[in-house]
Amino acid sequence: MEFLLYLNPQGQQLIRDMISAKFHIHENVGICRNRNNFGYTKTPNKFVVCTNNIKRSGFDTKFYINETLYHEAVHVAQICKGTKILGLKIKNMPLSSDKIQSVKSSFNSTSNNNYHREYEAYYLEDKSEQVRQLVRKFCF
Image (cartoon, rainbow, N blue to C red; front, side, top):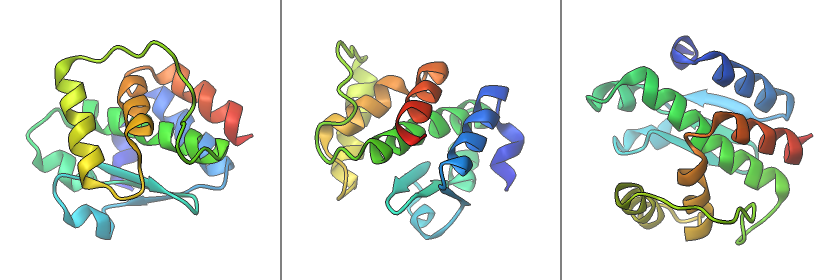
């Protein structure tokens, strides 16, 4: 899997944690035909990174592969916790207007996520240590 070459050390450990938690890691599968998708997570324990879409986006590949990993790993923690609507119950999650727009776009393009769960993922996607703690807390 090519995306593994771009991961920072925290991302590499997070992938090992998700594999230990019985998540199946995939790259550039069907959901990635929509070029707006950078990643995807759903039950039963499926985790996808759309490396080709990230590379074609014109954005910094290493940065967005890691950010996508953390974002989707928040959804992994949500799945492990078993929360359908309320998410992880993180409090005080200020987001920039750009990220709020991203939440709305993601929410409108998915059928299984709810707004709060997506909001949590955007809030936490740049907090790698906190994401890893949440995955370890809820998946082990």
